[in-house]
Image 1 (cartoon, one colour):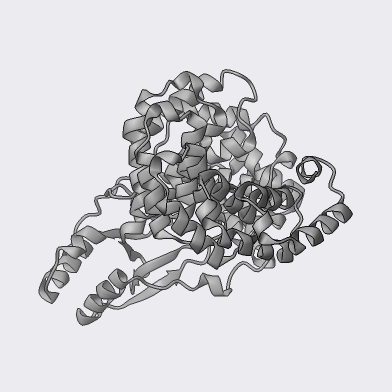
Image 2 (cartoon, one colour):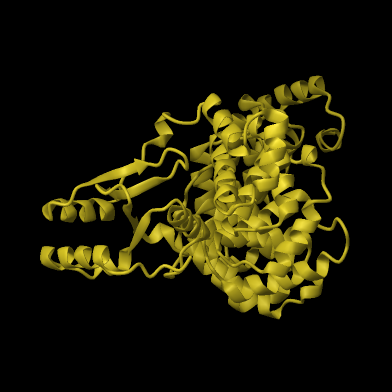
Length: 467
């Protein structure tokens, strides 16, 4: 009865009666399948019944010896859907899950369990290590592209930079995907996988290139990629700085098929930020995104408004607003940049708590060395028109040092991420004499004298960055 009602029309009165019955039943009357079905039914019906879920959680904890991968996955998924976090239950389920034989799990069990824990915000390193072991023990014949994509996304969401996540990604990248046919790729699986690489900041260039070939094949069909897929693809290529001009052009063509009013505010912001990072000069895209920002920016949250401003800044610095500026001046009496910054300020842009930038230990060490050298500078200076915070701005108000730690680079590499490249490019275009201090060069210095010599060399040498 519960399953049939949960699949369509929801009679809340019936669910309330069934809840009263279920809560009053002897726990010994339940088996693993029935208790997981009860929890799944309420989750599917979108009914949050804390009393029932607490009761069912107690029942599950009394029958851990009966649980198997399917029932664990169903219970975790139901809790995640209902946003019901019970730490004691999750701890017990994790303990049971890790004691079951790895070959008892199917890929869908792994991604459901890992994704459920991720959605509930429950960080369990032991469980993730075990699930990584389960995953890496399986061969290509047990996966399709969708299963690979969902599993990658679950690990990326749950433990973004944990070694177990990197292990799973390496297994899929080097052991599973090469044995899979490109013909069975789908738009959704490609966008999810690219999103996973972007989240984990793993720059697997050859695999991304192969996924881009899949995009080229699929975009032969008009409207093949919806806006969410377009945003995911562009965001991944921008984050990892792995732009393929032909793919980006095809994706932009897919985007322009959709009226800007049909997009979600975050989709407009993500595409705008991505086009800024990739420095896309397509005037069609610029006008499209300006229209999208005019329509959606008031509904964006703070972070998405920041992305919108970076797009406007990029267009201004790249000279892409000449035509659009004339149109905006005629229609609104102000240029796009002026309008966007006014909206940003009106909606609570600057001066909020989130604007405070905390220097890293690396930056504090560099600034201490510079003070010992009697150099005058300001830390975390916020440039008024761009909103960028500069790590160390010298007294000449022109020379700025960016202290780039590991978070500025793709995981395990010395290749800067797209956001870092864009900031460097923008600061250079704004007229600053930019000097970049990579963390690995500073880490090699032991004495104060060595560090001071490095700073002198950094400030007197010709910048090597190519913009």
